Length: 520
Image 1: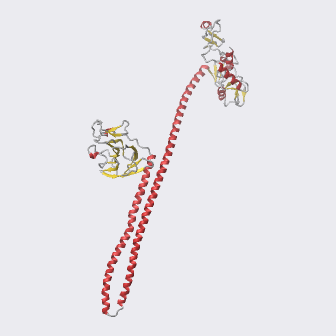
Image 2: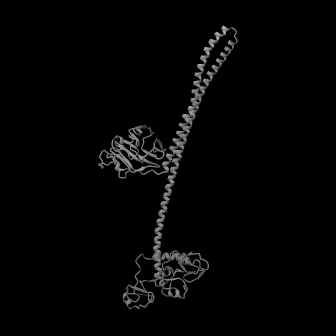
Image 3: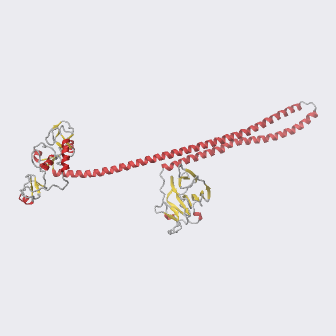
């Protein structure tokens, strides 16, 4: 009995439950911190704050203080309570321990089935489930049954308090109505909890996306920096090479021109001597001597004229050779610069764009080509795949991609085995499907990089251009710029190495094409 009385003393008058985070007001009454906080939240904007127990008024919202003594009492009380089912309530009127069926809040008595039949049932008698906490069911002021709920003070009250008591004029609801609202609030709380959890998941997902973006940006920064550094080195090498060629050309021209100048100086001296001889002949008074000297001078003069014509021709050739440097060296330099810039643009484009997800078209795969279930791997097969013979199917070794490209810039990555014969490239869909002329590179409608043994070549229209990679090709990048008519092959390593670029004017949509043979 003492335990029950103590429980009543440790019960919050607002929520009618044992105190949790209990606080004490200046008037001496105790409440759960959350309960009194809710009451005063509802009183925000009014002139005063009141105590739900004694109606003491406070001009300002009081600071809540923990009741440490009461806190210790509640903790010790709860620790002594056995963890068992709810205490059985017995009939008040039976001599023996007969369980009660109902409790009458008006009579403050619990009734078994027998006494319940004898109990009067006017409206003021309120029957509830058996309970020992009758004090919590009655108004501490009017000692009447709590039937209403004051929404302004967030307190359970009796009818008298509602009509002429301290809660007169307040917004009041029945306990059932308030309970239903609480149930709605619980439903709303559950929904809000679900929304909050979903919001947290989305926030976590966005944080993960942000982290991935930061990592990707950091990787992209490192690779672009490496590419810029590599191309800067290439430009420096090109500058040194061009300047060295210009210097050598200047030295060669200077030597040749100096030699010509020396020869002209010698010729000028000879001409000066000859002019003196002629002047001397002109001054001779003897006709015979003057004529004899004149004949020999005429012959020498004719020879000098012929030699002078040859010298002029050599000088003209020298002048023309000076102009040839601009016509040859500058275009070559410009082309190399264009290649470097295009190469840089293509390489950097690999990391700004996303690599394409290329899928293989089984309807085009030859019956000696095995295609994986995810449509991403093609391999040579000794066993006939027994696919139906259709017009779009290749006779030998090849398969096209499902996707085609008729504009824009695109790239895809390919992993390659180190055995067999392998080929990767692009093809028009109008490529033939039977005979040797259908193999990629053997016609004008396809371009490919073919690999066999230690040989590597880019092939188009049966014309091979050999390439010499620095290391075995395990991963490739194929870069297509449709409008520019460029198809580039790169070795995917660090840094990326440019293998070869094909230029063409594309007139049809293009498919990625793959060639596998002899365990490729």
